[in-house]
Image (tube, rainbow, N blue to C red; front, side, top):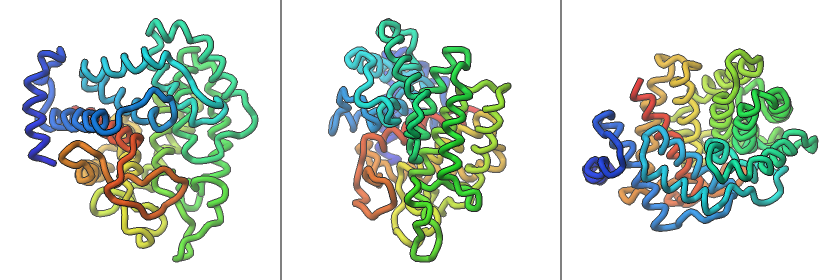
Length: 353
């Protein structure tokens, strides 16, 4: 991966003037990270282009790409996202009470100044406020804490923190159902609360916990530091980060089953990237002590980059599913690339500080 990235880096640096991007603002490693992200995006567009569907998998990809584009100030990536938004016209597809279906609105809310957003803002706000007021307990699975709260908190910010308490109440309900106080980890959903591994331990799915810590990070960004909800989120974030740090493997990744690393001989790169993103974000936002987590993050970068092929594909991604299971280590997923972009974007800032 290193040699091919250097080649792409040279090409990228030569095109920076076209992108209106000053590459001299970044270190060589940071430029390598940006080039790696762009290579992965190019691979995705060549092999399996992102459709105009607004499902959660596309949402994760585009949210990750958005953060990489904004932090790197890359005009090419920004234009790609702008074109996608224009064609999609800020639509939300499917049952909006399903958290998976509103994940894309996080991206929309980062672009609320766009003319198309202004045109559809009332419609989208009605959809999201209906989700907030819904009492059917749709956040019954760990993934929901990434799919819904960040978008809803972004909406709340635009409305002077109007919905913060309601969002927090929904989060607390999910925490009470799925969070193990004993283990400081999340069950994927209720049916796993009493599901034990061969060693007699409870089963805690890697990617499920990755969704939670990444969702916490994106939610906290939109909560005032003076709000009581901020204290809840940051305290909970710290507990989860501290626990996950102890479970990192020597190769920088995490095992599919966090409670039993011997059960599966694979480490899902997407779940690991989500954890790496979350912890790196925590350091960058001074919620976590850099000295306490720097070794974890350095190992993260080494481990994650081992899952990037020379063509830019991000492999070793567990296919869509609700629990750990064996799979082809060469597998790629659209959402998997999104988790890579999330980590790379935050690692850029980590290196800057």
